[in-house]
Image (cartoon, rainbow, N blue to C red; front, top):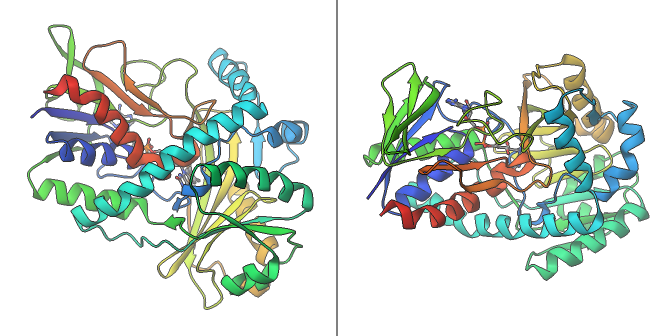
Length: 407
Ligand SMILES: Cc1cc2nc3c(=O)[nH]c(=O)nc-3n(C[C@H](O)[C@H](O)[C@H](O)COP(=O)(O)OP(=O)(O)OC[C@H]3O[C@@H](n4cnc5c(N)ncnc54)[C@H](O)[C@@H]3O)c2cc1C
C-alpha cells in the first residue's frame, strides 16, 4: 500500500483519490481552497455528457473563425495574444480543427466517457453519494438541415462506438420533453441520447472527501497552496505547502486543472493547456422547466435540471489568462437563454447564482494523463470542456499506469 499526495481537489483530484483508494492506497488531498470543488468544477454545466463528448476544436469552428475573431459571436470569443505560449497553443488548437483530427479526438473522448459511465454506478454505490444525479437524457437542438446533416455523421461515429443516440423530429422530441414547446426558433431535428446524465460536481466531491475521510483513507490538506516538491533520492514524494507542514508520501499526482502558476512542478507543460472562460447561472426551477438536458447548438448553451434547480452554462472566451468575471458576458449567457425559451419558459431569473471559471483546455481536448519527467510525479489535468464527464475514466487510466510503481 502506498500513500499518494494529490495536488488539486476538483472533480479530477477527487476521482483520482477514489481510484487510488479503490486500488488499495491512501491519499493526502491538497487544495489551496478551504474545501473540495471550488475551482473550474464548482458550478459547471453539470452534464455527464457520455454521448456528446466532442472535441472543442471542430471543423465547423474553423468556418466560424472570421466571425469569432471579429467578436460577432455572442458565445465564443477568441482574442489573439502576443504571448508565445498562447500562440503555440492556438496554432495547435487550429490544427485540431481538421475533420480527421476532430474525428480521432472525439472517438478517443467518447471511449473515455463510456468508461466513466460504466464506473459511475460503482462509485455512487461504494460511497453512497447524493448529488442530484439523474440519467435524464440529453437533447441537442439543430436549427437547420446543414447542422443536422453534420450531426448525423457524428451520430454514426458515436453509434459505432456503442453509444445510444437517435435523431428525432420536433414533434417526437416535444413528446419526450414538453419544455421544448416553449423553444422559440425553428428546429430541424434533435439528437437524443437517453442515457446521458447530470449531477452536481460540488456535492459529488464533498461526498467523496467525506466518505474516504471517514474510512481513514484520505487526509485533508485544504487551505494550503503547494509551492514545491519534496524529493527523496531524486523522486517526488510530496509537496511543500504554503499554509502547513509538507504533505509527504510515496508519489505525487498533479490535478491542478489549468494550474495557478505557469511554471513549476504543479503547472501544465508549456503551451499544453490554456484556460477557456465560461459562465453558468443556477436558479429555481419553475413548473415549465425542462427535465431533460438541452443543448442549443446555435447559441452554444446548455440547460440542465438539477433537482429543484435549473442551470444554464456556456460562453467560451479564449485569450487572457488573468480572466475575471465580466458582467456583460454573464448577461450574454442570460440573454441567450431568454432568446431560446422566451417568456414561455417563465423563468424570472430571480435568485440567480452567477458563476464564472475557466476550462483547462488542451488543443486536442484530450487530458494529459501519466508520468512526468520527474520520477514519482504524475499528471492528470487538461480536461477542458469535459472534466466532469471524463473524471472517473482518467483517474482509472492514471492509476492503472501508477500501480506497477506503487507496490
Ligand atoms: C462554464 C463551464 C461549464 C462546464 N460544463 C461542463 C459540463 O457540463 N460537463 C463536463 O464534463 N465538464 C464541464 N466543464 C468542464 C469541467 O468543469 C472541467 O474540465 C473540470 O472542472 C476540470 O477539473 P479539474 O479537477 O481538473 O480542475 P479544477 O476543478 O479547477 O481543480 C483544480 C484544483 O487545483 C487547485 N490548485 C491548483 N494549483 C494548486 C496549487 N499549487 N496548490 C494547491 N491547490 C492548487 C485549485 O484550487 C483547484 O481547486 C465546464 C467548465 C466550465 C468553466
